Image (cartoon, rainbow, N blue to C red; front, top):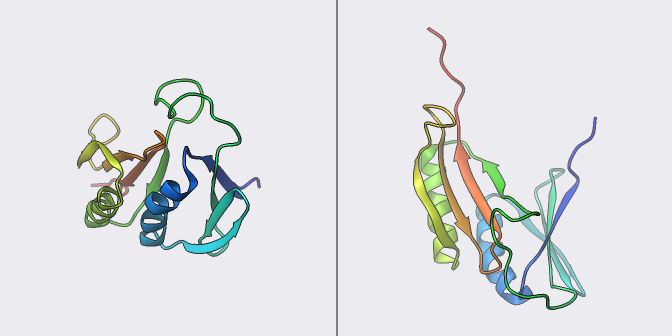
Length: 135
């Protein structure tokens, strides 16, 4: 079975990326992994490692949601309260609110989520979608 081993994300400024990603990833249970020239990593046990990279070259501004490339990364969490908590952590770390936490009925009547973007236009979703209860 193929599993996602790691996810590399290039940000416009590595130190700003650290300041924005570290509080969010540690709130999600990730631990600082390592720092090498041009990149910083976090891991969560045997789950997917997340690596934030400095840009290799300057090519314009931040990523723009909806263009070819990155769409967003969604973290499934255990409760609506956890969505709210992570949303607050991200906002306190300087992430921009795209969508406040709420129910997104277009996905399901129980799909509760928020969306934030970092300074480089990287969009993250925190979501809770419990299974439907059968009658």
